[in-house]
Length: 238
Image 1 (tube, rainbow, N blue to C red):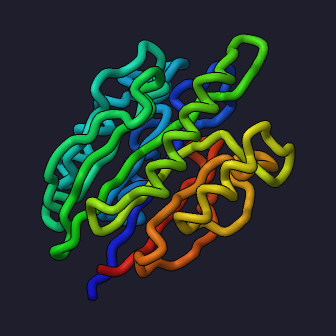
Image 2 (image 1 turned 120 degrees about the horizontal axis):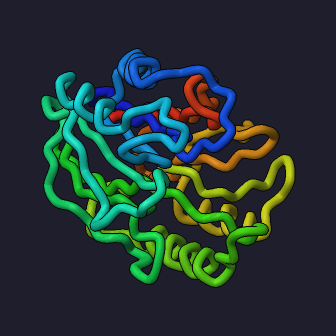
């Protein structure tokens, strides 16, 4: 067996009023320091809202380092999109997957099939919407998105392993969110690879769910100075 890793990061490019002092090179350096085999990104866009990060430059730098990118069917106008990147020398990209909840938020559901060391992995980079806020009412869509996610985990059989990584905007610690019980339902079918530690303020909004048969380590979120979310690191063997 060989060791591989997946780094998940909410880039926080939708960042009005952000006080974080950073630039594009800071994000690139943080990613490369961990040498991940796979990278899953949320809140991606061509430019951050306040202009401190150039998303296209970041992807170009990662391309020169050996990473190729998988995109969703279409991007949204705001920098709240998802991406998957993979190290070409270690990973064979097989095909793109469409959003499994096609009704809405397709830009937040980047999926692909990859082959690593003879095994096929279905990987999604996900960014669930907020349930309800002063400016958004996504109650119906988020409820349905959870139903589709749980169904995917429950009925997954076609490939060797499933990995769902991202910002689920759901937490059972800190301020419990409206649909947090779905996390427990999903854990009936997939393992959480991240310890029960906050990833954003006092809440654990970000997670990586993997097939129970995948040989992996459970890790703590990774503190950083480049985002308001902690990064996540999945270490696994194939």
